[in-house]
Amino acid sequence: MDMASVTNWDKSGAPGVLTIDLSAVRRNWRRIASLVAPARTSAVVKADAYGLGAERVSAALYEEGCRDFFVAQYGEAVTLRSLLADDAALYVLNGLQPGVESDCALRNVIPVLNSLEQVGRWRSTASLLGRRLPALLQFDTGMSRLGMAPEEAEALSCDPALLAGIDVRYIMSHLACADEAEDPHNAAQARMMQSISESFPGIPVCFGNSGGSFLGEAYRGAMVRPGIALYGARPTDILTQPMEPVVSIDAAVVQTRTVPAGTSVGYSATYVTERAQKLATVALGYADGVPRSLSNRGAFFLGNVRLPIVGRVSMDSTIIDITDVPDGALSLGARVEWIGPHQSIEQVAEDAGTITWEILTGIGNRYARHYR
Ligand SMILES: *Cc1c(COP(=O)(O)O)cnc(C)c1O
Image 1 (cartoon, rainbow, N blue to C red):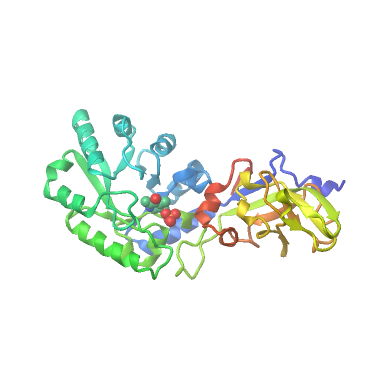
Image 2: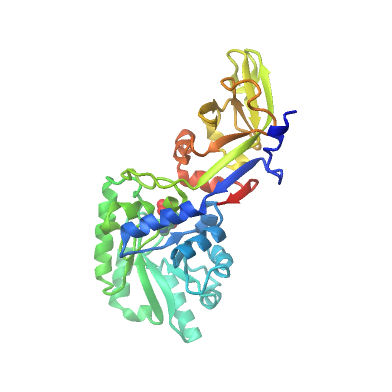
C-alpha cells in the first residue's frame, strides 16, 4: 500500500472533506454591502446557512458588520438567537407560528408577519406584554407564496389600529425571478412594491435577495436579503464578475479496479464499458449531496483531468472513470475534487439539472468540515 496516499485520509475517518472559506463569505457580504450602500445588507442564514453552518457564518458576518439575520423557521431562530449578540436582529421569514407568540417576543426574535391573522396575534401579544413589539410586514407582489395581498396592505394602512403595539421595522417582499435580470416579472414586482410602500410612509422597504441586490436600486429598498451570493454562487445572469467561491469538497477514493470491455457498472447496470477501463469508487453518494441525477453525467477532477461519473450514483459511493489518469496516481485514500477550482457549484448544478441552492443545502453531514 502506498503510505503517502493513506495519509490523505481525513483523521476523523470521514469520506470527504468540506472546506468552507469564511473569509470569502465575509468578502462576498462586503461586496454586496458596498454595492447597495447606503441600503443595509442583512444575511440570510436559513437552512443552517445553506448547509455551511449558521453559527460559524453568522459569527463571521457579525464581525464583518452585519447586524440583521434571516432564518426561515422559528426553530432555527431559537437555536441561533442564543449564539448571536443582543444587538443583532433575527427575523423569521415563514411567519408567526401559532403558540410561540410570547416566547418569540421574550427571546427577541422578530417575526415576518405574513397575514392579517398573524398581525392580530402579534398585536394581542404586544397588548398582553404591555410593550411595543418589532415586526416586518411581508406583502406578496407576485409570487403567491408568503405575505399579504395588496388589498390587505390597503386595509392596514387605512386602519392604523390594526397595527397597535407593533413596531413595523420594514415592509418587505420577495422577487420570484431575480436570477433572470430581463424577466418582466421583476419590474412588475418593483412597481407593485413601490405602490404598497406609498401606503406606509416613513417605513423602510426590505426587498432584494442576492439577485435583486444586483438588479439595481429599485430592487433593493433600505435593506437587502442576500443568501446564495454570500455562499459563493452566481445569483443572477447579469452578474459579470462571479462571487468568490466559498465551498470546496474533496472525496476519498475507496477502491480502484480495471475492468474489461463489456462490464456493467453500478446499480441497474446503466453503464457498460466499451473498452478496458480503469475505475475508481469514491466515498461520496447521494446521502452526501451528490445528486443521483449526476448518474452517467457529472464528473470529479484530479487536477485538470476530468473523471466522468459512470453508472448510477449510489447512497454512499460513486464510480468514476480514471482511465486518463497515470497508473498509481489514484489509489486507496487519494482524494479527488468534486467542487473546487476545477469544478464550480454552478457546473455541478447545471449537470444535475438543478440550482446551486439545492446543491449547497443538500450537502450532508458526513464530511470532515474545515473552516478557513
Ligand atoms: C431564501 C430567501 C432569500 C435569500 O435568497 P437568495 O436567492 O439565496 O439570495 C431572501 N428572501 C427570502 C424571503 C427568502 O426566502
